Length: 136
Image 1 (cartoon, helix red, strand yellow):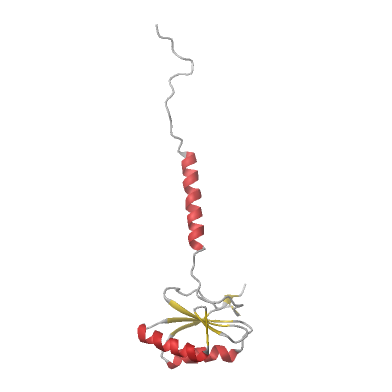
Image 2 (image 1 turned 180 degrees about the horizontal axis):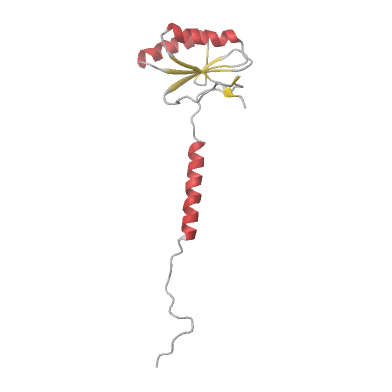
């Protein structure tokens, strides 16, 4: 004679709610990590503040930085203004319409930033942006 168990017949179950929690945690982690992997080609400087600043497309660009001391950096590499001109000429020969971002320190000599802008205009490069931070 078979006596039934008071607990009844239990079958194994897969709990789905903890699995969903783990998947959302992993998704949030991957999103945060991918957002922090933005490639920055410029030297960190204190950018000037502007109320009309707008986000630009960061695909295939060259960064020219002018530091507070008047040093020039072409994609984080210290160069002179003559080397900036030579590199822009070589860039113009390779790419039909290159994108240039000028990072000028807010306390840098304005003439240094204008000289970089002048070099880009001499070569006919039209996609030039001066990086700023948004005024709160």
